[in-house]
Image 1 (spheres, helix red, strand yellow):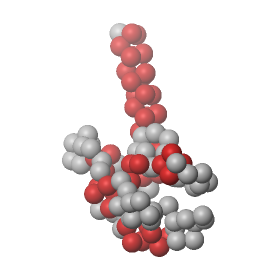
Image 2: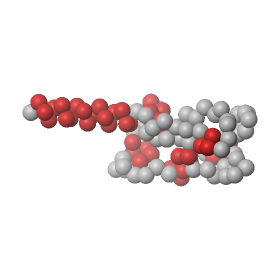
Image 3: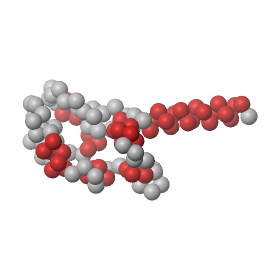
Length: 109
């Protein structure tokens, strides 16, 4: 019985930690649950189409228009069509995709 309780507690802690990382944490703080992004079963794949269901691309481009040295949501390589998950990780640390080739000091939420 004690062993099962420890396993259950460890699983709950692991799930809570995973669910609170990356942009998922921000969405959770806004009152959204897993189903908001992952669909009715809470297990679906999140795609750029999922993101743009709530986050309008034109609004994102406008909100980051003054970011220097260049707008991270408009690139000469991808226009405004780079997959959101190239930078924004749902359950992990986000990364600056552009820095694979460039040295931009973008703060990626």
